[in-house]
Image 1: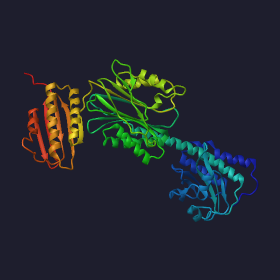
Image 2 (image 1 turned 180 degrees about the vertical axis):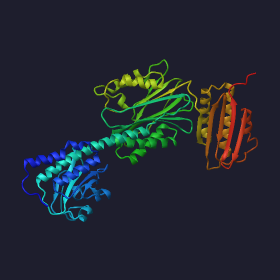
Image 3 (image 1 turned 120 degrees about the vertical axis):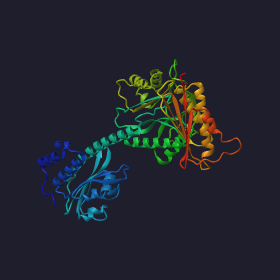
Image 4 (image 1 turned 180 degrees about the horizontal axis):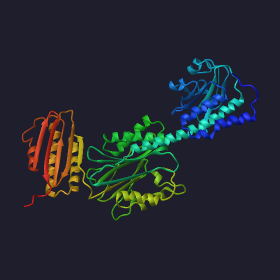
Length: 533
């Protein structure tokens, strides 16, 4: 078929109205694309019409919508950018007309199998960015005119606008859902520590790669993280998720924050091309009185002590992760006195246009107080943001050491090796203090726990090793402790050995031992108060 006669102004106006019809705006993206393709096909007297969009790598065009050639979508046709008919349009960013289809000018076999004779296609461009290609074809020879190209480009501009808006909406929704799923919905309950956190998206649109995390480590230590992936949108959120998971994995293997960040850096440089992120990682000792910190390009946290002004922690700042090899990373250890508060944040909280970073940090230090952790978050946001628009996302995390707090059961799972015993004792001692154990009762329980754990380390496993699990809870006025392994006990070695159970029994009110092929469980109880006379 062919177009005959000149296109009048009335014809041109009618064509434009059919492409720009505002009545189409109520349709969702899929239905809108189909309707536009049908209208374009009718207006141009074409037999086929298709939209191909760039994949996330911008390397391939992927068939997304089609009429008269639905096989393109069903078979997931992919055309390399720069190759074939559609690939050439995307690479050259201009319309292309093919009067006679053959193997030399069309890569897609479906177009040839359909016996399409002539093609015209235009690039889909929005905000200067190529999003894909729109093309139509005829089953008979056809000479497409400049008016045909103009109409098709007009339709392409409409498709590009709709696609851009749709992709942006999807990007924001996906990034938001991903970020919500990765942020701790409920911060851990840890005896002796109070946590609070906030995340506020920036007004610039599109979420970024800010995140915070808190997790208990098997040794009884606590891991605390705050980080910021450079970039915005879904890609930054996806990278943030991968970094969060990788850091958690490395935290299970390393006790030094600097070493954890070093391994995270290696992971990023190897697997995440072109990615950079700032990260602060802190490990709180089981006793809660000391914190080890390492910063990969991240702003220093703020420490607020009772009766003292809040101040930035004197912490050396090493290179962000993802940067080329630099000096060795460093760990700094600070004291965390009772009731002291550690405040971690991302740069969106303190960076403002027209204001120096030092001014923002000074204002933040003035806003942080030694108070209820959640109240601190609220007060800081009120003073630092108020009613202002912020261009970047804000994440903050507060950890406050409390001398009195709700007591939760204690759970520890550590490798059954001698070096973990000190951490177990420190964690148990902290928990006993929180439950109000008297000096005598606390001493007895510590001895019993120490003997039970030492027995597991020495007798439960062979060279292959295993795990040691400790569970403690307060039932009424009685501490119930369970020490468990999953090994097969070996006989005591040497004279005078194997007296652990005798010590445990002497330090507790009662004791049960259950041994089997799946391991041994020792349960003992100790009242914290004497029975009334």
